[in-house]
Image (cartoon, rainbow, N blue to C red; front, side, top):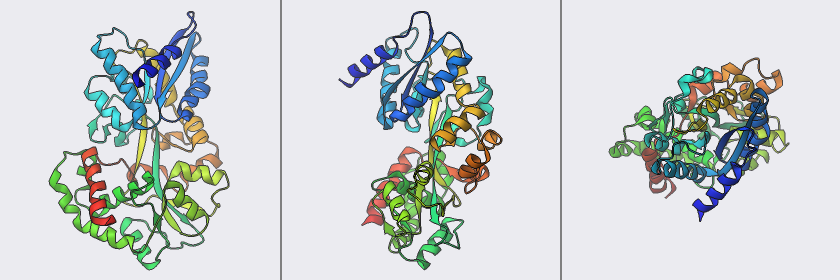
Length: 377
């Protein structure tokens, strides 16, 4: 049924005027992703490419939306279709590696002018899979520590300093453990990066099942840390408790933080800190299917979408996301207020040095399982 529904959606989306050259874009993610392409990026591209019609189809939120794109491309590959239905796909990290490994994507990053504007390892490595050349980050979501500047004068710069702060200020730090939201999961992953062994291996592999034995002290310390903190109901729950002054500090998604602040749901005295050695975030990727009918147009579309101007006005200003390309390339493309809002607390240099991906999938699963066994119990 799911495949049938997707086929209907694709058929409807591909119905464009016969006179137009059509660029078909499939995007996983929430409805705002579809709207971004349909209402903002598509018209911008059409204006610079007369005679081209951009048609967007959404495949649904979360990894399941990327899975549907994977299934569609796999079926067309198996059928030896000479040209596939999608020209550009927008996919999550987890599925990008599988698509590259299964020869469903074309290498194109080196062929577009904006390819050299991204140096973060998420453009090369996707949860342990080599995606170099196959993807361009659309944006980076990022976790960081939010804090009440009126309540926190000695702001921690690192995980060890944060642990000491929480011990000295009982019940003033809050996070959701690993339940109900990824901000807490990101905090736990960052804890293992800071206090576990060989953090770089967690990001790039290879996987060694025995590595988790080296986390015992880190997990024991985290269990002790939890005695001094508040376990919140989730991503929104942490923000709610910060807003009400029930806690003074906690991990949040940066885009959620700024959206809440813009909506008046967080006071202006709330600030952000990206602590060393770093905390995870995750990108969405632009990719080109291996047999896209409009490969050159697809490359032109992604080049526009990842240009400093569009990243500044579309990604940063409209959604409070961090750009997919390196942030320093946006300097001068945003007015001072927008630049200061997103890059004063967390600078481009902070993002480059302390913006981490999540661990590769098997280590990620080991961290969650180990937390349940050795911290939550």
